[in-house]
Length: 190
Length: 227
Length: 187
Image (cartoon, rainbow over all chains, first blue to last red):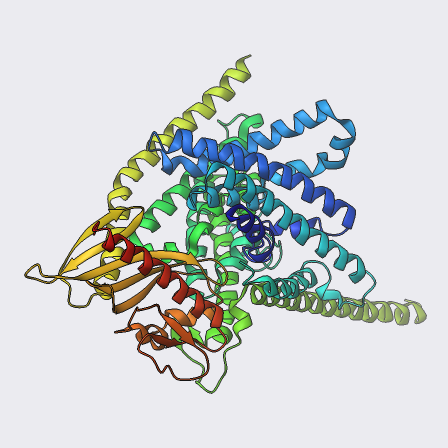
């Protein structure tokens, strides 16, 4: 039950993008087309789950026993950067179609603050290993959801008569505000 | 190729022309998340500026020693080190602020403004120019965060820097201090900033056309008079 | 080959310098951070027990509580830290209780992430002051829209009923656990 709450909380109620403002850069940059939004979401979710596992292991098996918690920021960011590189090489070797679908999005993920945010939340909230995995899956699902909805709206916006100065980032932010308002309706579910 | 950019320009460009928030649309996460009040905006901007300035100074000083292939990794480690310093100092000396900013201090590491300035500027310029650039970008970030935080605080909780400035009769707009308010306010601010720039550009263009017309009229009349 | 050596060397130097610097600063900051946290907890312990002068921690069965006493060491009651789910996330409370656990002395909200302007009203005086002297038997109840008519009732905040209910529920669970421990003679 608790695991389910963690999942729902990360995916919907406290959505990473719309409530915590994590991962805004790709949210504004990649949410033009539904298809690329879904691919980006999948790639991010994939990296998030692996990050959740690796950062939990790193924090609880290495940093805490040796009282090196103050090294968590540099070590997390390095692990994430090398992880993304490794995942990219691995996918390239194993599956060409998957690489073609996700490949170009992977380098972008290193600078996605949602990933580092995830790792920091896991150590801050003292999640257990299995809770961390669920948290990672939930956060990824929430990111994919927000990105896909946003892409759907932006495809429609293409046809709308937006004032010239508001095209691009401004209107995207305003739409995100309305979306965040809509997602507030989920508050109180947990 | 010698750069002819005047030193003052290295600083001033960050304020408006290349303002990291309004013009480059970088570093959105901390901007949106912490600006429920002006004081949070100030703290976040100062912390980010500190990291930006120290990292830029150090990286521009040792830029020739870092091999090109590992430069990003080196930058990240340097930035992460300075961020940890800020985080520890804030926790030790300003526990209240550190609590309010929550996990967003550590997240300065992935603020694209910082890595972006290292890659685009500090790695190619002298320490002095890098310092000016970092200070300018930091100041631009400061302006954006304080204005966004100020607007949200004034309308959302009737106060500015904790001092009530709107009368009790004004019902505060709760939405302004909710996440949704952050998106809406920043969206509108960006839009109006664009509108201002577009208008200025149009006026400049029109005056240019006007000038050109006048000049060509003179030329035509001169030609007609057979000069 | 030369280049690879240089790459590894540069990164190692940066890593070692960074690690060394950080451990220095951490050594300086760690005691200060611990002192801050202790001061915050201490402040809350005494806030919910205005007459208390001393406290000693009770740590049984995963419960964080502090037994407080006055200047001449007469026991006054307990300051109990308990948390649970609110409207949007975790709410952490510091509950002041009399020694027989039948009355509340005061309530402090340590942490919450409720909706600003609505749910956050639970941290404000009008709501919290209702708990001063409130009876905990058989349990704390809440009413909505009307004035409380029993000594164990508080009025929920209009527009923030769920947050108010959550605070009451967390308190009831926490007090129940304390009562059980007291019955077993553990505190």
